[in-house]
Length: 97
Image (cartoon, rainbow, N blue to C red):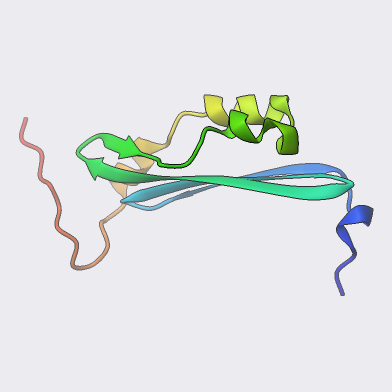
């Protein structure tokens, strides 16, 4: 049985999930209450990534300025995404040079 969030230990949890064509950054701040924010980046071309979601600083009131600034300052692990195979059946751009 899980305990209510009001009794959880204060914590910040940051998870980055990397796939060949998407990178998702998710953070949860627990300080009495739990607040979760996320941002997903999609590959739109070779070496190009785009997110339509707002920067984490826009969630500063929910997750605090320190965590928001940290998240916005993280480099996307695009090199890791490039190492992963694309989903089966997806078209793949082949680089030359």
